[in-house]
Figure 1 (cartoon, rainbow, N blue to C red):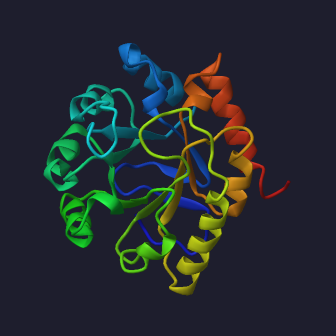
Figure 2: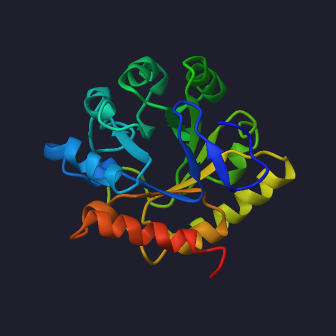
Length: 242
């Protein structure tokens, strides 16, 4: 992704779309896997251009979700940005598979990568955007030596592994700390927040500095996912005039 001087319009590197930040990214983790193609197409038709895929291995986090084949199964249906979040051990072993499946970016956890720069370099070598993720208990300071290389920084606002958890309020402070650090070093990665994003938290997260808000249960568990997606999107895009 190109470096930005303002949090406005960006052109995503690996597809032709430009998106206006902040943006809501539906999380496939909360979708109906039995109807995954229709679940994705429904929100794409409603305007969603960024989708978040949580991949879990049953080791780093207890649940097991899906692999590259699920992503590949919907890649041809939508021309959207596919953001793959690897909550797995040894993510460097799977970069090629997710690249071939149609990922646009791959995000990996600081907590699972003792050789983090190497993994980020491998993601870039595959011509993908590279994201770096920290858990709720991991301090922002660990990002100091990787922020120059990251296209995206993801702050987990719940403990990874399960959808529908309660938002951790300290996330706002971590966002403020991160934005100060990025400003000090004149770095402009996209800042993403994942976990507990809903009608109560979305606007404040956007105001505090989140560019991409991952929303799963708030969208796919709603009675009408399209209506919920639009309501969340309206909340964060009104932040400049509210």
